[in-house]
Length: 361
Image: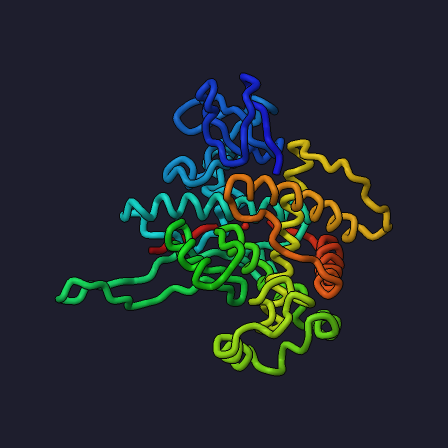
């Protein structure tokens, strides 16, 4: 993740919508691809002070303040939503003030996800563009009604997950207290909003890039996803727990449940690595130790990631924080990462198609 510079020379970050030094409004310019200082023209239009492109704020920025991206000002033909918000199908009920803050945090994580997909040139698109497997997001909450006794009763439970291109996030995951409770209950080293997005987008890419295309190769690495069935594997996992000595071949305990979850957990770890290395490069967090030039791009990335992880893990422990890199990359895990690296490189040659948000409750 890069940092940027305001007109006043103050550092701007990916989430900024205002410079904390000169108080100028800032936003992502789609023309020069960065967080830039904005100069107002009138009530709706702005000039990017880096490239002089005329812009308007995404509706979710101008109206709801949960986005910080702009669109090209094309008069009456200006797009309502930015290149990232147009993937939203359902947004939370923002008549509840708590949901506005949760939605903001979800959008921050979603923007970081899509930024990393763009770095990797992974393909994604919308139904309106005729994309093969349209990507969309639903951000929803459990529906609760009160019974006469005054205690809440859940009428509809929303599960975070992926189905045919639709990624659903239960907005309760944006509540740090509830999320930490779940992290402890499930024995997870991390449980974050960006982690949910990276896991679920992995299921999306399994359907887009593996299903009907390279399933035999997938089975050779991750196992047969058809036997046992997902339901049987899930029931077995929750009854019996993870496989013994799972650390030898799996990135996490949950990855042992079924080959689909193994792929998603490993793919999520791959995206973690890419994001951390990209940020380290942009903030000049360098590794001084020599890296073996193995000629294998993934192995070089993993070496840098592990060395960086050792240093930052120690810093986090000094402050009583969780490890940044909790995973151990065994030979079995690396073999799976190699498959994902190959898949990403192969898919980056596909055309990435450009995306509309239909607001729901």
